[in-house]
Length: 346
Image 1 (cartoon, rainbow, N blue to C red):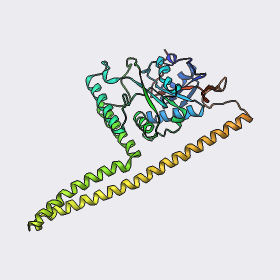
Image 2 (tube, rainbow, N blue to C red):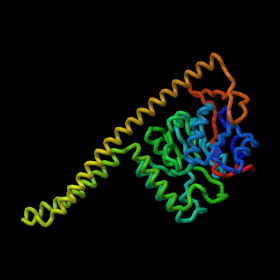
Image 3 (tube, one colour):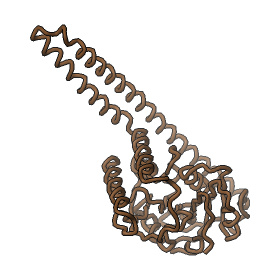
Image 4 (cartoon, rainbow, N blue to C red):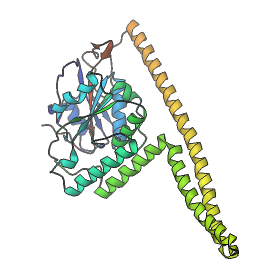
C-alpha cells in the first residue's frame, strides 16, 4: 500500500508519509518504520477511527504540512488518485476534497448495501442542505487551515462529522471521481449493516444538534405544543357543551404536553447559548494558535534549529516552500490510518 503512494507530484516540493498505529498488536509501527515512513505515531490502546483521524491531523499540522491527504491502511484507495484529489486545492477552488467512489453503482456490493448508500446519501444531503455524493469516503484532502479548525468530538467515525463541520464553518468542498481496489477483507469498523446505519445516523444527528440546537429543539417543541393543544381543544369543546366534568383527563394531558413543550424550548435556548460560546472559544483558540505559530516562525528565523521528532529520525531537510500567488505550499502529508492490521508491504 505504501509503495502505491506517489513519490512526487506537480507543484508539491515535499511529500511525507505519516502512519497512525491505533494500538495494534501486530507490529504495524515496526513495519511502517522498516518501509521508510517519515513519521509514525502510535496509540497505546485502540481508540477508534475518529481519534486516529484526529491524531493524524494534529501530527501533520505540527510537522508543517500545508495539504493533508487521508487514506486507509487497507489499500482501498489507489495512490494514483492523490494527484486528482489535491488538484482542486492547488487551483484554489476547494478547502476540502473528497474522493467520490460512487458506491451505489458499484456492482461488487450487494444491492441492499447499494440501496443503503443511496438512502444515506440523500438523507445526509437533506439534513446538511448540500449535495454530498459520497459522505463516508475516507479518501480526502484538507488544507492546513481547514484541518486546524477541525475538532472531532465523536468516537465512532470522522467522515460524517468532519463534513458537517466543513459545511457549517463555510469551507469549500469538492468531490472528485475515483476508483477503488477490490476489498481484501470485511470492514472492521462495524459488525453489521444495521449497526453501521444506526451509529452513523446517531453521529449525524448529534453533530447537527451541536451546531443547530435551537432549530432542532424548536421543531420538537412545536410538535409537542401542537399535540398538546388537541386534547385541550377537545376538553373545551365538551365544556361548552356542558359535559366538561367527564373529560378532565384531556385537560391534564394537554397541559402536561404544553409544559413539556415550554421546557424543551427553554432547553433549546440554553443549548444555543452553549453552542455560541463553543464557537467563540474555537475562534479564540484558533487565533491563539496562529499567533503562537507566527511567534515560533519569527524565533526560528533568528535562531534556526533542526527539526526533531520523538517517534522517527530527523528529516534530512526542513519542509520547503513553494510559492503560489503569495501563499506557500510546504508539502503534503499522507495520513494512513491502521486499525489492528499490518500495512500491506507490497
